[in-house]
Image 1 (cartoon, rainbow, N blue to C red):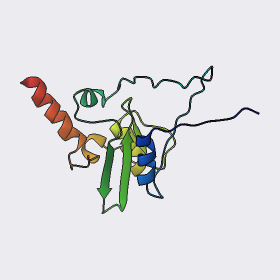
Image 2 (image 1 turned 135 degrees about the horizontal axis):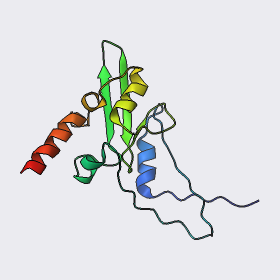
Image 3 (image 1 turned 90 degrees about the vertical axis):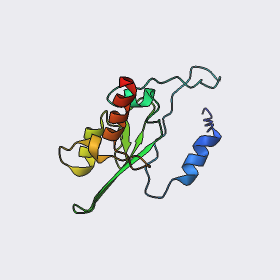
Image 4 (image 1 turned 45 degrees about the horizontal axis):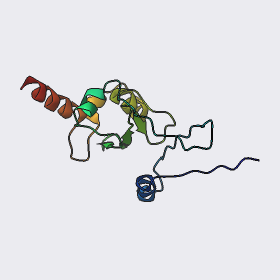
Length: 136
């Protein structure tokens, strides 16, 4: 039987150590054709969040949250390197902020105004900042 060896960079281990008991942690494994460790592929952001990421306004690994106290709902999502959102409790990433928000709320909802960065900005605020930068 072959031996499986998994190597985690120190940053990944630090991230895992900070994860709370209820957090969802996604790990992607790929098979290599030989015993040489695979090189990390450069991932280019795509989709609705791509321009924010390329402009440095939103980073891969950023944690987005929202709270709706009246509806007794809250959500947490992590931005993937390719510009999708991984929502806690859901196995697959979502391609847009609104689809990710809808997965949590069960309703059609504007994810651009719902999700907040750790600094309290909405994704819509980041879009407006990007518009201002490109207009200058």
